[in-house]
Amino acid sequence: MDFDRRTLLTAASATAALGVAGGAAGSAKAVPSSQIRIGTEEAFSTKEHMKAMKNLVDANPEVIRFDYKLWRMITSDLEADTPKRLLDFENIRIPEMDEYGVTMQLLSLTSPGVQMLDTDTAIGVARSTNDELAGVIKRHPTRFAGLASVAPQNPQEAAREIERAKTQLKLNGIVINSHTNNEYLDDQKYWPILEAAEALDMPIYLHPRTPSDQMRPPFDDYNMGSAFWGYGLETSTHFVRLMMSGLFDRFPKLNVVLGHMGEAVPFWIWRLDYMSAAGVSRGETPIKLKPSEYLRRNLKITTSGQENPDALRYSIETLGAWNVMWAIDYPYQETPGAVYFMDNAPISQAERDAIYWQNAQRIFNIQR
Ligand code: MN
Image (tube, rainbow, N blue to C red; front, side, top):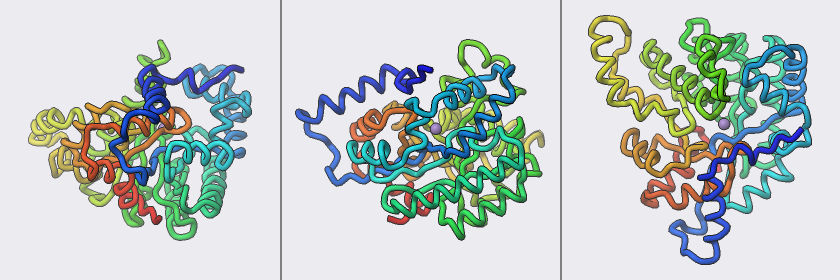
């Protein structure tokens, strides 16, 4: 099985990666050598998670969905580059962090987490993953923080796990990989999860996955259900659903984090306000504030896998520099490209410090 994460590289980040290697000797860097860098969307897996995913894809050989195809590849050879990096902390990950000046990674179980598993398996894998994650952080408290996994399949149990993750394991938030069995978190049955997240100040990182069955057919061709396009549409739609359901009026302190420069949601800010005004006045949506007000209050975004200086500049102007965090999307995208991007972005050093680490510390309660 030839599955090499480098085939996922874009030409742009490959060029940026070369820029780091080539530029180190010559050009003076704008950033201080003491720059702190906290990556906030950095994936890992565990042996138990890999085994559960392998059992799932082996039991469903007829399914051709992108996520099944991907997990057949990943679990077919755990020595291949991507699974090896997902399962590693000390041998590959920390040396690579050291090489490129990454101070900390905020770890999260790789997508789709436990959300494709049956409920009992999902609850068990989430708990064991969180225990393992807490162990890794305990071994390397200055290098790793982490987001807890939960099984939304059982919302009451998920709420209990959020509390355990906060109070006992000292984790920094939770990751939910968009839809669960084609359902979205605005469904009232999921409110216990949102209530716990808000009460315990645990931000929800709404991470992408393959579009739900309702959305999927147009994404099934041309590999479009992937990170190329389908992931972002699925996840941005999920966030807008949460907002338009009135969820942020019910849970005003809830923080939802979107990667990939906000999955394009910030780009729509003016039109969301303009178009929602009519719907709100006709009583079609129950929201109390304008969409732009929720975007600036309840949404935080990260730069994971979106190394576009113009999009960064726009996001800072739109949401405020205090709502933007840096991320690599390790191991799916390259550390040197992400570092080169943020080191050279057209922003002030104050903005760079906010985005590189201060916001992550504040939003995810990361102690250093
Ligand atoms: Mn990711």
